[in-house]
Image (tube, rainbow, N blue to C red; front, side, top):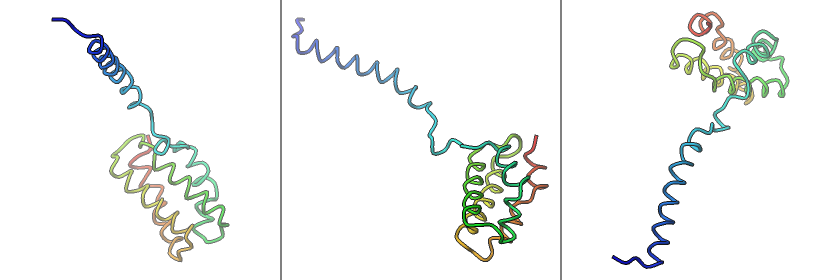
Amino acid sequence: MHRTPFLTTVCTLSCCLFLSTAVYLPVVADDPDPETEPKATIKEVMKKCFKGPLVKKVASGKATDEEKKQLHELLVEMAKNQPPKGSEDTWKLMTEALVKAGKAAVDGDQKAGDMLTKAANCKACHQEHKP
């Protein structure tokens, strides 16, 4: 059977497209999404928020708007991390409660202090997740 130059070109282009997709797609699929990659480690967040005065200051109502915003942003970043040990489900529940309390503080919710105090339960989180 005789092939025309057009069919040969189409077949060649199709093969090249298939092969380039097969090589390129796994590389793209492994690229981390910058929106879901944490910008701060758990250790960094713990040092800035919990060991420092930030959580206590926000919970007591003495924090500036900038400090409230900083706390919320750091809590969001902590929630993006994987727990060093323990269940991912409890990690998600605990960090979501912290993020929600931080958001309430940013929004000026009167209950934010109580929410943050309740959510920032060091013993419960460390017992489950601290290595």
